[in-house]
Image: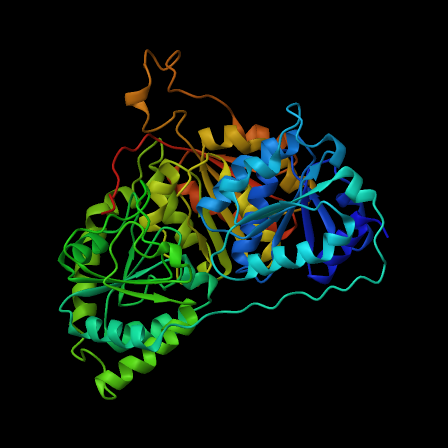
Length: 545
């Protein structure tokens, strides 16, 4: 068989269901022949975003695979791969490449050279008989260690080169490391000695599917639990020990407890310092668990470090805590939960006038609040887009089950949420999949709403349309509503209708929940829906720490 057919055969053996693609690449036809469904987007970046969402919701058990053409395809896909790399998402990119005789020519975009800084591994399959070995290594790296994209370029002449039909290929198994028992013992001892510790939970807990263990550990040691932006939904936010999430914006509970804490125990987190991350005040004892040694002592000095998979590490922590506690729990008087409840009530009371506002144009916080109460959150996956939708949604949309929210933001590309939620819907077709985006974000990616209609991916897109690039006033000269560079225009409900979806324009806050319910009926029939909600500009935010 030809080299490209060998690649398709391996993808099928690996259980790949979808090939997120944009022509032209011979792997699209080869994969279709073996029963892998091509999903064609309108732009390369969006198809990468779709692969990203698919991998996240599958917890990397099923991997998003993307295919683009040589040259411009690889060029246009770069932003999507960079986003996945920033947010630690394992996807496999298989771009075409020029023939081996034409490589290293200045007229050709050198994908292998240029993708080196946004992938875990990037290489070129230079001979067809190397296909099995290089594909095995790609899937091995995608399944183990730190999650990140992998790219294999396939030159045109390697695609047509012959390989023995009976080549050997066995999918590599995932291997997960546990923590060093000495690190576990020391970390638990430090935690139990602290007066006001908190658990700082990252995306690693989601990938490890360790929510059950996290719940047991938190209840055992009676410690408040916060999540990072990417870790949101790893711990149920309606739990008495939850203090919610913090990033660029966050809950009042995180502010309260992080400030007074004397020990921060990071689980499945990188402790990265970015604009969208929580800033941890100085003077704390720091414990960090990550599957990647490169995360340790990166931005914060670790007093204790545990290298290992969060699920296995949490099981070890539970056993060690029980041993050190002598069979009881750390505090049996419910004092921590009561303090959380009091602080949460005070914080929500401050924001309730905006969350339940009847003003017109609609306050965007009212949209977030009504969305949360209109859907079954146990059967919903929600995500935000960059900018104000993220900042407004993150603290107040309460998650109660793992992977019911896709938080992101180490890179903040506008329009990312649309592709992300389409991939999420394909990974979990039984769930309601919702992305909340601004009008600026729709301008970056909106034509791919047609992809959802054409490929029958019934998502719900909610546009918060305030006709402006909110938050950028200090960067832009503003003249009048008509001519200022800050201001945008468009009737996005009409655009969505023209692209083949169901759409409504919502201008009264009383209509938000009924419109969501009407959209759900269309979605149940297999049609994507878009609600354009006319909102006011809202400059108040619940700032993170």
